Length: 263
Image (cartoon, rainbow, N blue to C red):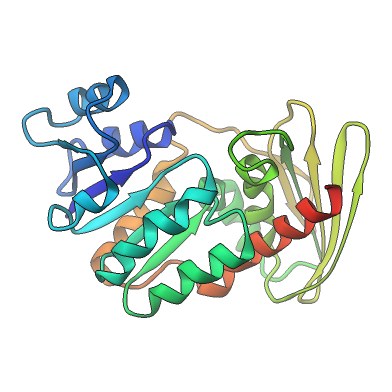
C-alpha cells in the first residue's frame, strides 16, 4: 500500500512514518513542497523513494490511500474530497472537520470510497476495556482544550474526550447543555439512553473516562497512535471503515454545539 500524506505539522505524521518503516505499507509521497519539515520526514522514512510534491492533488496517481493530517480541521474538506472522488481510501486525522456542514460534505463523497476519522484515544486499550462492558447508563470523559487555539479552537483537542465519550455512548444526541466556568466547560448530553458528561478543562489536565465505573486516567505512551493507524490500514485492505458515518458526524455535531454555546 502506497500512502500519501497531506499536512505535516502534526507529530502524528512522525508516528505514521516510524510505524510503517518495517512494514509492507509505505509513505511514498508528501505534499507541501520541499520544506525543512518535509525534508526531515523524508530522511526518517525512505529518502530514495519518498517524494515531496507541491500540492495535495499532485498525490493523485502516486498513491493508493491518503492521510489528511492538517492540524486545522477547516482544511480537511478541500484536501479529502478529491481523493474520495477518485475512489481512494482516506483517513482524516482528528477532527474530521470544524463544522457540521464540512463534515457532512466530506461524508457525502464517501459513497464509493472508504473514509474514516477519529481521535487516536478512541482505540486505546483502556477505552476498549470500558467499551467491552456493554451499554452504559452514565459515561464521563475529560481532557484539556484551548478555545483560542489557532487550529480550530476547542475542536483541536476537544475531539479527544468527545470521541471517547461517544464511543462509549451509542445512539443519537438528544440534548446538550453547555456551561462555561472559570477553569472548564461542562457538557451534559443525553445520547441514546446514556447520560454523558464531558468536561473540557481550560488548564492542563489528563485525559480520563468512565462508563458506569471508576474514572480511568489515560497514559499516552510512545506508541499510542498505533492502534488507530492500524484501524485505518485495515480499512485500506478490506474497504470497510472501522466506524460508521454516523459516528464520524456525532462528535462534530456535539463540538459545534459547544462552540456556538461559548461564543
